[in-house]
Length: 90
Image (cartoon, one colour):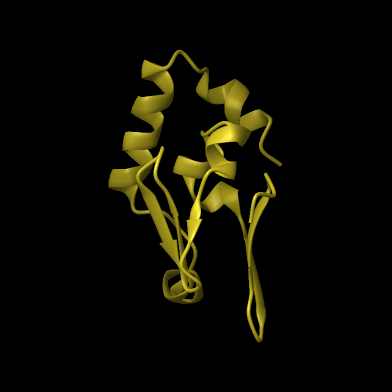
């Protein structure tokens, strides 16, 4: 799950999705993405206050615009260039 370009759940069927669908993760540092809690059916990133569940991924991977905007505002507040951060995200 710490892969910087994809989220992967290893269940009976392996599910994987690019983090580009989740700006909160795409705009986070590798360190922030690597600090998460796994409940089996979802993952929670306490530093980012982000929770992604398998059911949501299966329904269609994308982050709600409200949370995407919050992620962009957080990145700007921390002095991160949005273009530079997103260019580094494969």
